[in-house]
Length: 342
Image 1 (cartoon, rainbow, N blue to C red):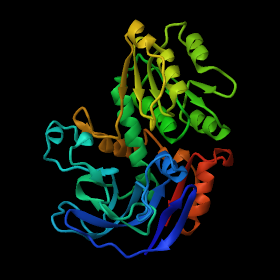
Image 2: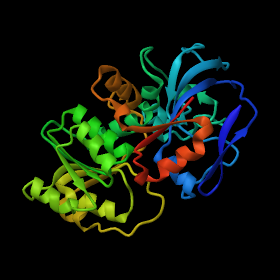
Image 3: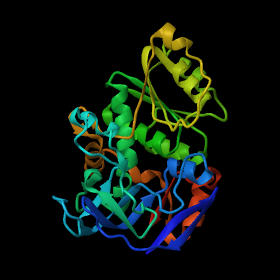
Image 4: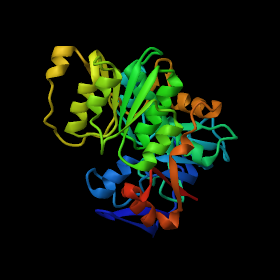
């Protein structure tokens, strides 16, 4: 089968690899749609670790073609998606419902290939069946929407809150959509590129701040009559964005970090002490309350409350993956979300 493998910094190529078989607790899925995530780009640029033996890609949707021993509740032909990790279901953290912190957590495909391949392996613990009327594109967007649902839930937002989202990429825009679906009073989002502005408008942002032209901290002061936002969700990363997130929050407000922080930072912590701002992280997805974030994301799409396909700007075949990564990595290309379609 064909699989796209990283071969160096900003290098990826399609190779012939051995087909996978369904190991115990795994299913084999015919990959139909896969999104290029920001974490995939971090690996592409060499910022994060990567495998030069296995295809990556974890925003995946496809159909089950083979089922391994011990897998119940799924059948050949099911339309499925999956979380980006497997969990053992038996450790102390899984017992408490915090399976995203599982002590035995592993990759969703084990030693198999991910979504940038004709077929991928999915561990049963990460697997979700989708409604029959879901498109493959919708299915591949469940994963990033689940990330964003959890971030909004971590913020503890209410219908009386003003929410700020820092960053207009995939996670920022879907966090905006999830916050609107949760019924927050007003939303503000920062953007850097024209295509992000258009999607933010489509999702009903109350204020859009172009960081090339405005200082978000000053805009938030004006927007909130110097009070600050009730919650700030930071999706970009870096010291300046951390400081901006804390600066935008009101006294005793909440800051949620969902960005990929991959190096130590020098940041200003004074306001956290003085204003009792609560800073917390949001790690992938799990249970938010009694519901899994993935189930919530599937319901938001099925009900029409969130249309995640608005962020998809480009679609390429697997044999075009070199160009797909080039376009995804260059936001001046007009890209927000790039999908590999098979």
